[in-house]
Structure formats: C-alpha cells, structure tokens
Image (cartoon, rainbow over all chains, first blue to last red; front, side, top):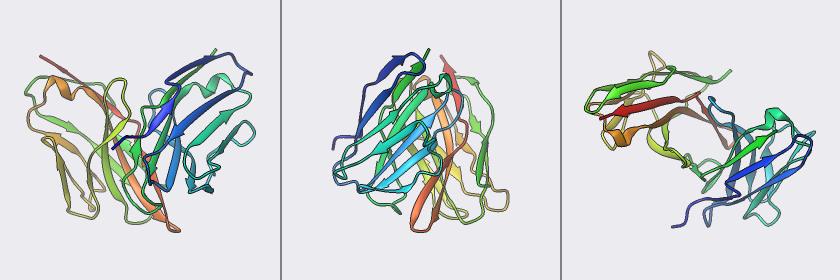
Length: 114
Length: 114
C-alpha cells in the first residue's frame, strides 16, 4: 500500500514570495491533516479536512496561509506572502476517518525562507 | 490546556544500554497516548500506542505503560541499537465533537553509539 506522498521535499524561497505544497493521502483515507513542525518542536496541526470540507482550521494563520482539498483526495497548502518564521517542515497526514485514531504521515516538505 | 511534556535531549547512549524517555501529559478528557519515531530524512512513524489507563503498548522492543495516576507514558527499551537513533515524539489524542486532535511533545533526540 502506497503511503502519503508529498512534494516538493525541499523548497527555498525569499521572504514575501509565495509557495505551495502538495499532498496525496493514502487511497481511501477521508481525513487529511496539515502540520507545521518548527525546528526543535513537535508538529502542530494547521488544518484538518474531512473529505473536501474543513473541520478544524483554528491554528491556521489565515492572513497568509490557505489550503484546499477540492475533490476530497489530494490537497495543497499555500503560503502568500512567506515570512522568515514560516521556515519549518510541513507534514501531511491522513487517516481512514475523523475518529480513527491512527494517522499516517508523509515525509514532509522542508521550507526555508531567506 | 491539553499538552505533552517530554524530557529534553539529546539522549546519548552506548549500544545495548537501557533507554528511558520520560513523557507526561495534561488533558481534560481521556486521551489515547502514542509514541512516534522520526528517522533521519523520513516522516513520522507510529511506534506504539495505548488507549486506556494501565494499557501497555509495545513494538520493536520498545514499551510504554499508560499511567493515569501519574499522567505519564514513559518510553523504555532494554537494549538499544545504533539503528534506534532517531527523534521520538510523545503525543496524546483527544476526541472532540467527533473529530480527533493529536497533540505532540517537543521530541527527544536519541543518539546510540557503537
């Protein structure tokens, strides 16, 4: 069974530029999560989707971050404009359902903002 | 609020040494508890879990017991190997409104030397 796929694996941009990350969850997984992992910290949930609807985006900085999952499968996370403090690893995860307690994580995208 | 506290790293051990990584939590409900492992260049992988008090999770020689009285979930292994070198994250999962929320500790880096 294929795991969660993410791209790109690495991205370097200058502040005030925009960037987008892509995630393809495990086939059949209805719930998709985006996490931000700053160096030396644990992952922090940014947004959770159930199929193509948002169920929790309370920690998403909505002035610069946006995410979508239009067809209920793959998802994109965008930052516009980026700030230095956005440098982090962005992890995507998926689970069978919203109450299923095992989340499967992708390898992450490491973003460096200069 | 709900949170997880782990011992700070790095933890440096010789091969075959005994490992303990401490984890305590604060939660308003009855969480499930997890240990995730992140090997260099890879995504988070579930190592073990426990869903209720006094449950013991175990995998690959690692084990942890859910202690409600001390709100702890310490990770142990009797004899570590070089291949165990990684970052270990303790996490709690709360079910709220039909959706789960995973909260991570800051992670503990383990380095095992031959």
